[in-house]
Length: 118
Image 1: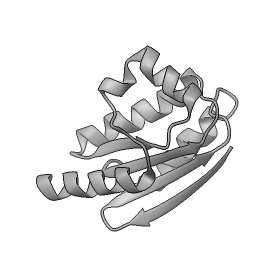
Image 2 (image 1 turned 45 degrees about the vertical axis):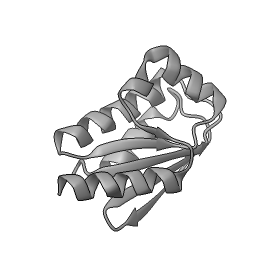
Image 3 (image 1 turned 135 degrees about the vertical axis):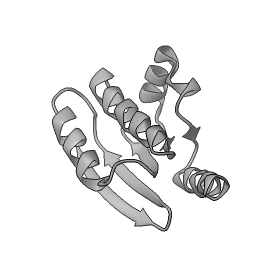
């Protein structure tokens, strides 16, 4: 798994490439914690290059979403591939975390949300 961060005005985009599973959960947790210091705000996870995700990856995303909500922000998912999308559907995540087709759509929604609340 490889991780990259892009800080845009008002939103942080975290791009993930590769499988998200128990073997790299700690790496993902540490990266998200380091990038989002202080925690919260508007965050977009670019998952367009994640072909597989298990419950470990899902857990990290949900923890980040919860942290963002507590600080008045939102975590959004973008570019979700079929297998992770199925996991989100089965677990009910889609009703709690906004999912967008593209990163650009997610960033625009995050910025709009920040303007409304700020």
